[in-house]
Amino acid sequence: MYDDSLLKHPPFSLDDEALSWVKDTFESLNARERITQLFCFRSDGDRPGEFEHLMSFKPGGIIRIMGTDRDKERGRIDALQQASDVPMLISADLEGSRMSLNYGTPVPNPLALAAIDDLETTAEVSKILAREGQDTGINWSYTPVLDINHAWRSPIVATRGFGSDPDCILRHSLAQIEAFQANGVAATIKHWPGEGYDDRDQHLMTTINPLPIEEWHRTFGRLYKECIDAGALSVMSAHIAFPAYAEQSGETGAELYRPASISRHLNLSLLRGELGFNGVIVSDASEMAGITSFVPSPQSKVEILKGGCDMILMTSDPEAEISAVEHASKTGELNAKELDMSLLRLLGLKAKLGLHQSKPSPVVDYAAHKAQAKAIHHRAPTLVKDTQNLLPLDRLKHKRITIVTSGIIEPLQGKSLEFIFPNLLRDEGFDVTMQPKAEPIDTDEADLVLYLLGEETLLTRGHIFLDWARLTENFRASMQRTWHHVPTAMISFGYPYFLYGAPRMPTYINAYATMDDMQHAVLDLMLGRREWNTSSPIDPFAGAPDARY
Image 1 (cartoon, one colour):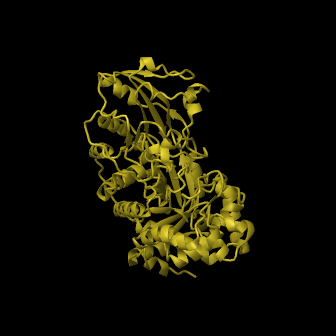
Image 2: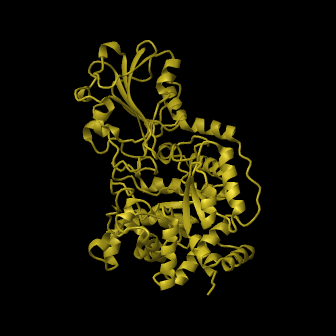
């Protein structure tokens, strides 16, 4: 029985015209099309036949990994939308820095924004991301990240969240939700029921939120509830277990560690029931080992819908997995009314975004955005300590600089990229030598030794840490400490906890992001052209008492 009453309430609050479109669209779909609308396919690269492949299944949406050519990306998405009987949700992770649009304005990541801690700046950056995303056809972002950076070794939270203080996380998340949704892009709060107390990676295993229920309500529960009340349109249910709530719900044994993405207790009882969320619940990527280690595909897709999610994110075998959902629907394993409600929510989200209406594309001033972002980058880097009074640099006193680095690690593909920082120093008149691998540093030939680290978040690599052996590629060189002989500094363009592995490093800077603009900003600060930020959104000493000295 058709019942769209849920769409009359927040966060949808649809008018009669939108409700009429939802009803007409719902009734126009056959049984298979209603199921394929519950799938969000992954799309990346420029593979021959991908367009035909997507359109043969008619999914409800795609998550697009954008290339560097804006016009090409826009043309691809326009073609998909024009060929779709039902407008598609086009989603992406608009998080900033290298977790963002390859063609877009380089903007700081959430941790850098938390370091600046200015809500107008967070809103400005979020508006840039939303407008440039919308300019290419993106209408749904899997942000903001509500995770709490408590277990500092976590490679997943790292630079993707707004730090370790729930109050700071809430302020910036609310600002981001408002900016995204005011600019036509649905916001998604993630990773439900809350990441950051487990330092493992849910790409590799189911992680655990270990908090007692009362403490969870004071932290994650408050974050989600206030963002829901502010109108967040969607929640990403992640491959994270919450054993305290599962135990309260009567579960035992392995069921205590069932990931939220396939848990009715967490999605329906807690999120919808206790917190009152009425919007779209999308699973985290369904190919991750956080779910596939618990239940195999294609059954995992059935379990995602049975567990209370409205949309399945990604599929590696669409024919088999759609067929599995169809079979589960016919046998009654999946509740028909619940499937209809999921479809209504997804159609309601499309109507809320105005996808059923013809709208002109936004006019986006990329040059203005780049100027805004450049100024913002200068406000982020934090001078954590400078016990040797190194800064500002002197072109004569510090003329010869030896740089030790293993480059920038790209977070999604793990590719190694080069820093531009050495060339920026050369342009300023410094003599720069790149330290050869597997050789000790010759301190007699340097006036300054500079360590450059370039790891933000990392996916599927387990942990981020100061890997001296990898940095030097030599057993003896990994144990060499130069600061007794020559001024030495370390700059982290990403992960903010490297002092834990180098506690006596005399000068240490957290720059949070690896983008070129951030490298320019750090150099300006090191040369004394601007004032340093001295606030930090996390404990940069990671609890190590000796790291302060």
